[in-house]
Amino acid sequence: MVQHPRSLFEYAWQQLSSKNGIPYPSSANFTSQVWPYRLSMLLCETNEYIATEIGAWLELPETISRLNKSHLHEDDWRLGIRNDLLLNFDSDLIFAEFDPMRFEHHGPDACNRQDRAVMYPEDLDVISTAFAEIEKPIILQISSYSANNNNPHRVVEQVITQRLNNSGFALHGRIEADGNMISLVYVRGISLWKSQEALSERFISWRTSL
Image (cartoon, rainbow, N blue to C red):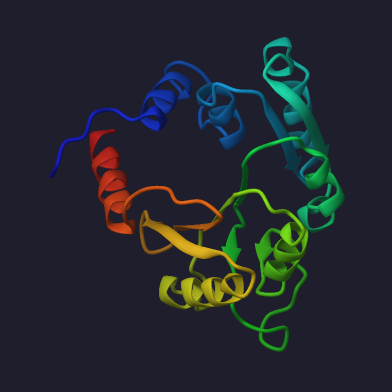
């Protein structure tokens, strides 16, 4: 296994993880720690208890000092990710992260749409619409934590990629933690690491070091 020097991500994880802080650092917390410039955040959360915790975090003096703007949408993200809100943020780059419990590739005839914690193919059109008029570079990460209901990685990745390709996004990285969890990174107007293979190798190296 190739040994890498500790990355900014790995350093932040060590500083924020259970021995030194919260049990599982959120992406918002990570970003506020590692990004050296001013930030704007649009956060969506349906769970009332978690939304209260997020709201309290946003009101901390140290958080306020880091944020240029923030907006917490306490409801379905499909209603919160609006183009007018995104255009209102003064930024050079947008990073958007979606963490559904599962990406469901089946149509409405085979899977109902009652579970709002699940992401469906038509939800990708909601994302594309929200970013349609934004010209600045975008990094888009979608993570699915379950392959239940016959949603294997190879199928999920193909469905998501084909849909987002139509909106100008290109697959730029993929990570599989196990047979259930997969994270896919798409970009528009920016390049990141040299290859998907390098990212996957780095992730495996980091996990084995924990």
